[in-house]
Amino acid sequence: DAGVTQSPTHLIKTRGQQVTLRCSPISGHKSVSWYQQVLGQGPQFIFQYYEKEERGRGNFPDRFSARQFPNYSSELNVNALLLGDSALYLCASSLGPRGEAFFGQGTRLTVV
Amino acid sequence: KQEVTQIPAALSVPEGENLVLNCSFTDSAIYNLQWFRQDPGKGLTSLLLIQSSQREQTSGRLNASLDKSSGRSTLYIAASQPGDSATYLCAFPNAGGTSYGKLTFGQGTILTVHP
Image 1 (cartoon, each protein chain N blue to C red):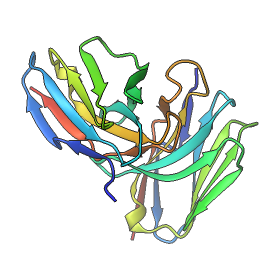
Image 2: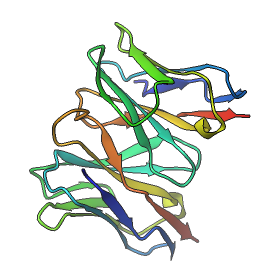
Image 3: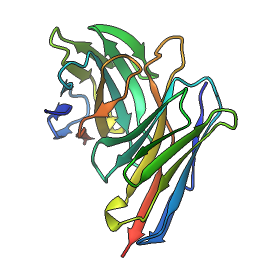
Image 4: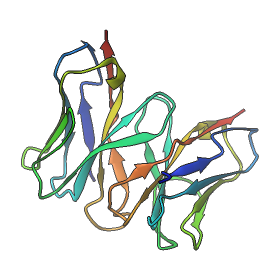
């Protein structure tokens, strides 16, 4: 059975550009969350979606947005990229909002 | 607001040693606790989940305990192996309110097991 899959695995973008990251949850999981992890720190919460509705948002600017599709997959969009957006972006899925979380391998975003 | 501290920040041990990683939290009204391992540049792998009503969970050479009264969880690794080298993170979802699925992570313990 496939785990959480994220695409792409690596991405290089220029300041000011826009990026879309994708996540497919484990089959049957209805909750998807996004986290940003910079080097040497624990992951920081960006968004949670459950049953296609936003259920939580972390302390990130409005340049960050996300959505969840009817098949429970999700996209994270970041506009007007800054150098400080360079990080590992992680997606997690769970059966419910506070169920055991399973993470994908992440997308490494580098902004130059 | 839940604050999570992991001690030590880094640990280097010879192969075969038993070791304990610590995770302290400030709000005892927790729903559950998860321990994860992360290899460099990779995603997180779930190791153990302890529900609020449980005291411990075991999986192979790993044992995690939870003491809400003291605000502590420990991850015990028996007979450590070089393949256990990784960063270990503990995390809690919000107990209630908004963003109640949000996981709050500690900074992690970097474990190195040398042959």
